Every structure is written in structure tokens, then in C-alpha cells.
Amino acid sequence: MSEPLLIARDLRRSFASGGRHVAALDGVSLTIASGETLGLVGVSGCGKSTLARVLTRLVTPESGDITFMGNDWLALGGGRLRAARRHMQMVFQDPLAAFNPRATVGGVIADALRIHAVVPGATRAAEVARLIDRVGLPSDLVRRSIRDISGGQRQRVAIARAVAVRPRLIILDEAVSALDVSVRGRILELLIDLQRETGVGYLFVSHDLAVVRAVSHRIAVMDAGRIVEEGLAAGVLAAPASDVLVRLIGAVPRLKGKPHA
Image (tube, rainbow, N blue to C red; front, top):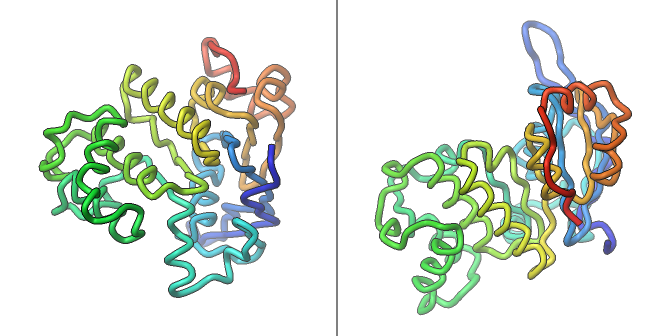
């Protein structure tokens, strides 16, 4: 692997809940290299989604440091942050809230291309069509309202939009959990192919160990706001060292397939 694309050190973030403070992140540190997928697993409420939102600066940490592409990510502001956001994209579990509900499928993707000046205006429509096809959607969806397509189709539009701006890192927060098995397989293959072609890095947040095993080079396990275990995917799953991972593996009838290499 290359030098780290993203370095997070000692991230802390708490929230008030029921009159008390809950540490959603309690000193989390991690790295992701270009061309690498770090799978992030843990039970519901362990802090995975908070970490994803802190890394993308949707939530501000109380303390800690993030270095992205060699820059102090938390120090960027204004135009510099807007320009840098192209290089770190996020795909949410429920993408509807991230879209303009009045937009069309084609408009959602075209706006990303326009805002970040990825391709000239004259070729934008062709690039939208290529991206829609690449995520397995029919071409006639381009003019459909984002409100009028299924949840699985919206998720594929979200992935197409993230891929469109040619980022260096994509954070996927349960991004394939709503897709049926055949579509999920196609999207995972797309993500792996894209990584091989471009060297994009992924933080793949999921409760599905079989999916995480299929795509991840390394796996980090979260519990109560902390990373309690981390290592190469094959080794971590073959010999879990934390109680939480033992429980997660025990809840899966059988993990099939080989870890991503």
C-alpha cells in the first residue's frame, strides 16, 4: 500500500442523550491508503456513522486531527474546503435526504459534474449516461424524478454521483444494505473495478460481515466509540480478538468467499 491518504488521530465526539453525555467517539484513530478498502464494523450505536460524518466534516469533532491528501482537513474552510470536498465523497444508507427531491436522476449527477467542473459542458450528458449505465440503471431513468424511483435505484444514483467527481476517497455508510443480492453484487464489483482503475480508497461501513470480507483489505472493529480491533481482513475474521467481533461472527451462519486482496 502507498502512504496514507487519510490519517485520523484521537477523534472524540460526545452527544447529550437522556440527560447524560454519551461518547460516540472516544479517541478513534485510523488510516486509509490510496487503493485500499478499510471495512468498519460494529453493532448498532457503536459510533460508526458518527465517525463517517466526522471524517466528511458533517459533524465537528471535539478534539483530534484529520489529515487528508497531506492537508489539515479540519483547518480548511470556505472555497478551499468546497474544492477539496470533491476528493472525499460519502454515500449514505438513505440517500433521499441528500438529494434535492425536485431533481431528476440525470440532474443529480449532472450537477455534481458541473459544480466540480469534471467534464466540459458539451460532454456532460454523455458522461451522465455512461455513469447511469455503469451502476446498472436503465437509460430512460435519466428524466425521472428522484422521488419517483425505488430506494435501491436511488442508492445506485448516489453511488454514480459519488463516482462522477473522481474522488480520492469514498466513505460508504451501509451503502449497499438496501439493495437486493444481485444488484449488491454488481455494485461491489463496480467499486472494486473502480478502485483498480483509479486507486480510490474506501471506508466501507457495514454490519454485513460477508460484504465487508468480500471488499476489504483491512477491517477495524468499533465498540462503544472505540476501535477495539484492527488488522488484515483474513486474519481478523479467522481469529477475532474482541468480544464484539466474536458476537458479530456468531450471528452470521457462514462467511463465504475470500477476503479482498
